[in-house]
Length: 173
Image (cartoon, rainbow, N blue to C red; front, side, top):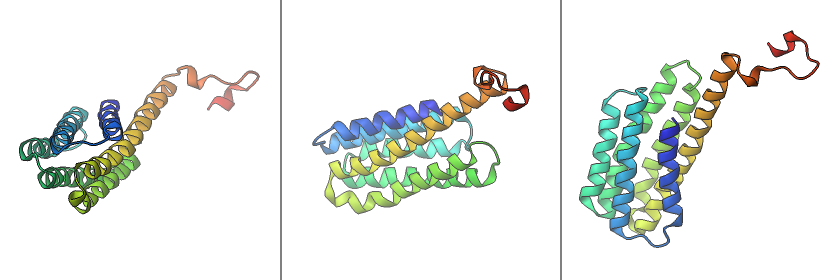
């Protein structure tokens, strides 16, 4: 999760600070973002193997097409598949991350649905939409990862489980 959030936040930062990107910058940024996202999803092993394959193919499509329309279509397809399967995964699972999968799915599908409407506005607009979705999902996944890490430390009796001075042992539980 933390790897995925880092990938999303780095991509989001690139989209914010690149003032006037060319179509080549758009294609490379989105293509590399989708390839890195595919790798992070594959490493998580939470979704079927077909999901990172589709996302990687979207990244390759963005790199190969080198056009606003091609990048938007490739990213839309990849994010739509990723988002729908994350949403379904969130509905099926009853673990601490189920709600996060649902939200991440909605973010990815929302980004995918918005991309075609901004194609005619060029690379800067497309990077803005894709980067905005990436930043939102990056923040979601970093909070999820840090929360799980904190809860794991609490479960094994780490420092987060210590009672306040003067509290009874029952107050901790």
